[in-house]
Image (cartoon, rainbow over all chains, first blue to last red; front, top):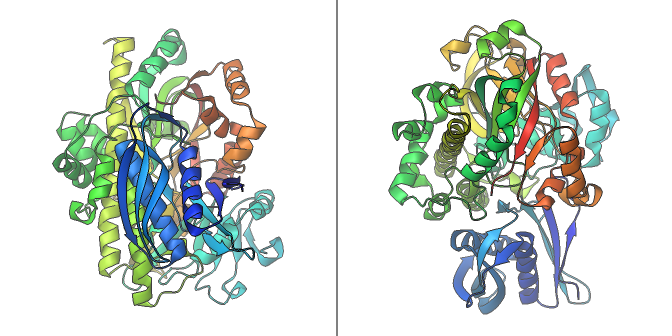
Length: 135
Length: 481
């Protein structure tokens, strides 16, 4: 299964991610976001950060989760490519992000937006989501 | 789908979608474009977004778009909306994530021929002095108390600390400081993101250019602005960096919840808004003002580094770089405008749009009172930029004009269409020095991905919203380390 793809958008970064489960969907969108920063990774032991979020609904939860991960990425100069789910409902999430220290980023993502946001379960039971990042 | 038939032509340069077009519109939607450019706007959702803005509570007279309009999130980029201060809403989507993204121009007293031998060295030195903030460049980490002082003091705080001249303050829009700023309305997260980014350029369309005055259109005004043919200028385009982005993220999230409480229903989530007088509205306005002040301080710090590079390379014989003006193009401000013959306080949202006050306006520096506010319109990398001057005619647009060229092609498409090394080669063939970190960033910002800045500025000039004073062309393009 494809993890994510980049869609056409005039000024910003529009991304569609896929997953067999909601967990995988959240992970693949996170990977899409962090890969877009095109970071140079320092060879170091892995870093772990905890996140706890409550949102209005599942799609807002995805955006709020990505915003939190982006914040941690920028503040700690780390990128995260694994998620350990502790709790996960449609409005609540408690996870550990696992990643590495970064030497430099080549791109900047300003923010994760709610614009044209879409999270859905497809007929075959798999998930897909579309998110627009302001860059 | 919105089509040309839905528009009423008000003049050669102004088109209107009447309020009757969609039931939820509170006012008409207007766009300043030529007929040809109007048709080009149908390629994305920008006009739908312009119509969406016309549904916001308290919007006064019309929702407006400038000729550099393109699709944003919530508001279109190039969008302007003035809300009644007592009945209206404030929307973070009407300002954008990059609060007070803006541009300033520094002028020298050198002509191109005098500076030419030093240009390459100067470009290298500037690149070294002004980090992008993404890489290994200079990193100074401030404590929260210092960040708070910048949030509330803006440019004034930096000048106080020795990073600039007193004259820099009056040469900034709002003197580089919005008084409504209250640092306690800004989250710790936002402050954390701001601790090491004062004096950083960022990436994307943000740039630093060494330019020259290629043409003067209004001699008398140019003289008052201190501009002359072949003069070397330096232009800085950046905003509030991660701190501003976090303020927008925090408050959009909060307002989404608050809208349920206030019963506000809007056609797009990114328009999330709250009454200006509500706790959420007031909180956002104070925090946004902090973000704006941070952005002004950021451009001031970069100015300090550029001046240092300038003196290091050209020596003390070169006179200092003087600030022509600094304008914000992503901001909401309380301004007094005339509505139905009476003065009224409005909250003017400008998202990718520039304030352009006319002669005699009390909010512009004394030295420019006679002619009007300098308006700086940056072009795209490697193309022309303009200095214009505000006019009385732009009263109809809340004294506002465009902010740049406006994208027409996605970054992705730009990378496919314009190989980075070819873009660099084209610039170098034109004699432009390019100092950059990655070729990809150069490809994304290729001039071909944007509207023609000359066309955009022509609409502003011909419609009378502002008058062209000078056309500037780049000699060196610098992207930070």
